[in-house]
Image (tube, rainbow over all chains, first blue to last red; front, side, top):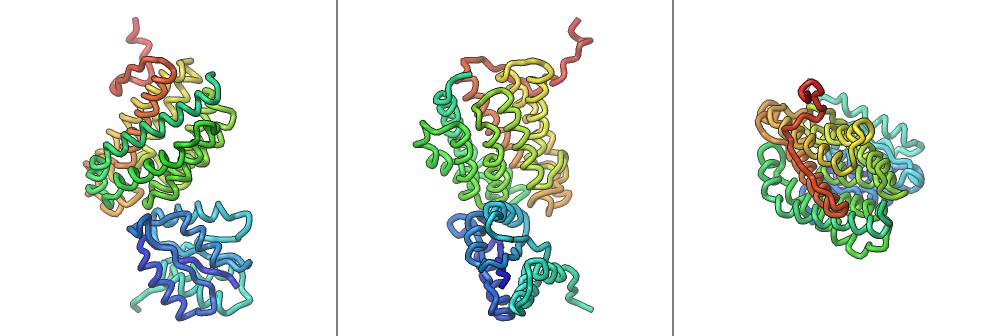
Length: 129
Length: 234
């Protein structure tokens, strides 16, 4: 099954988004990677790399990110494991993207491409109307 | 070219000098970052280079490229902000250029790979009010000074640092288009970019250490024209 990693500048935000996503797609491997050194605000490539390894069961991983250094550190983490794991960053809002990805991954018979596509559909969601 | 052991000693001295300088400038960098960002640049850079110094202190017998690579991985692991991937990731990637030692050609390739990686990763261009505004003139000046003007590497580096200083000053009136400062829009105008500033500090320390190890004198003047005006030299 495709794994999911949730990257945020805040450890609690990453944990919280993962918590909501797990409720929707509990069977999927959803791993949070939030916060900088010493639990402060930030992101760390080694933490994201460890989360990708944990989330992967051989079918690849879709990585959801918040902004700025989360994107760059996720890229570095993905480059570090690219020989072993097919991991991709979803260009999607963090929470909505994680929910979509979780539901898609948990439905089984999916690939990294299809889970990525589902996550990125969340870009179009509107809250009103 | 001096032997590998001496090259590694120079690189280790540079790491030490940069760690000291960034530590001394922590509050200055934090002040700059409080105006346009999240006020973590000083602390992040200081923690990162302290870790880089710790992790390289027993590397006197390693190759210069391995020391530089270790600096990159230390920064990636210890800097929580965008500077971690930008500085650390780019140093790590560019370190491969030094595999055959610190030749003129290798230092040019290092500088250009570093700049290219920063631009790819951060997607920033000159004028976006980022470290790229210090790096682009520095790297281009370094290459041109060696390849076209036939200047010795130390003089070329000195001119590159002058160019970086002009680039840092140029960030002040710009409106930020990348990084956390871009969220401020027009309110970012009038503030000097923290990343460009820390880039200049690092280059200044590299120049000092290079001058020490090459027994050379450097004459810095950021107001001198990079391109000599032939008509004025009559």
